[in-house]
Amino acid sequence: MLHQLLERLHRRLGFATAKAHCDIPCKIYDPISAQLAALTVLRLLDLIKELEQKESLSLTDQALLIRLINDKEEHAAKVKDEVRIIWGDFIKQPQIDAQADIHTLVHNIMLAASACKQNITRDKGESLLELVNQFAQHFWTFKGVDTYQAVCPYPPSEKLVYPALQAD
Amino acid sequence: MLGFQLKIAKVDGHSMAPALLDEDFVLALRFPWSCFCKGQLVLVNHPRYQLMIKRIAEVKGGDVLLVGDGPCSLSSEQMGWLDERKIIGRLYCRIKAQS
Image (cartoon, rainbow over all chains, first blue to last red; front, side, top):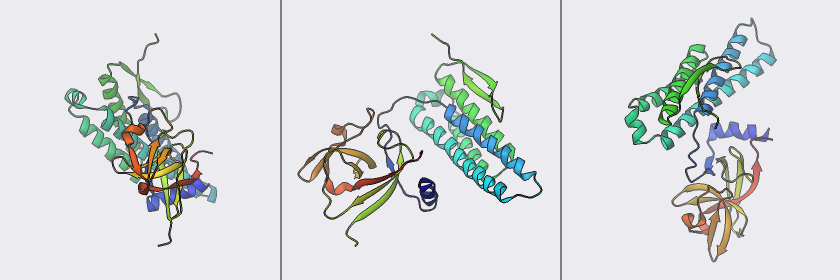
């Protein structure tokens, strides 16, 4: 509870952020975190839509709506963070040479994630997921790993790009 | 003015786990009479690496040598001896991100 209070203050006042991250590149990168965050945004948009269909919102519904919107904000920001880390730390000149549109794609993801923060329509979430899947596709191509698309086995039951990793 | 420094900061990363986890909040305090000892967690403004949280590994005169808890942290050698005046405060309180 105290953490939630500080988190709200942090959003308003912007406390300093102290680095405690791994200072040496650990080389552990995976776009799945961004994909799951994008899926979460889409799921939250669906849940917000369900509330919208009610004739009136009870106090409990209103409290739920606030939670859903807060989580949508948080996960849209998480998409940006996760993609930015891979873009900034993993992608270097050889990857840029291989996929010249990577900067545009990343920029489009930033814009799409912001659109998800500003709107509550499902199409914004679908666009974000589509772009993040494209990013994942590029990432696994850079790594020389084949991919496949499958519908995730949980709501919102959307297609994700998965790496086709083989067991030893 | 009040004679002490107080700063609230949000932790970014896992290199101080398990003492501190990503997204924890910490409260750093420094009083005029503060003295720093080996083992204390401190919030520092490092001239090269900026605002960071590390543990004091050694104190010599008015300088401190810092160390990270995690194996992937910058080494003490990389961070070098740091003037104690660069310490914003000792961490007195941790507000966990996950209970």
